Image 1 (cartoon, helix red, strand yellow):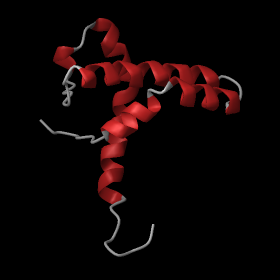
Image 2 (tube, helix red, strand yellow):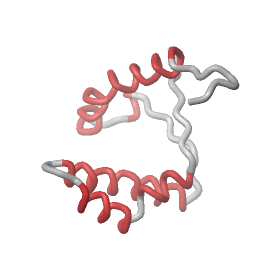
Image 3 (cartoon, one colour):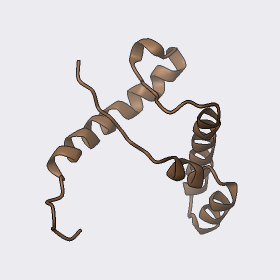
Length: 98
């Protein structure tokens, strides 16, 4: 078993769950990117609701997902693994400007 841990600030979630920000992003979006903005808004809003209920940790494993959710897992897991690899290879050197 390996673990890939993502840490996201509550402020980041709340900012991206803001419908006003989504409207601004949709106005600036081209093509089908407006639909992506709406999907993102829904995702962040759902997480914001869970945060408001006191939930701050989300452990995702295939055994917790139903068949429909597993479809998203199968789409996203390769990119998640790649981010795990990048987080190791892209480590910033201390004192080095970004």
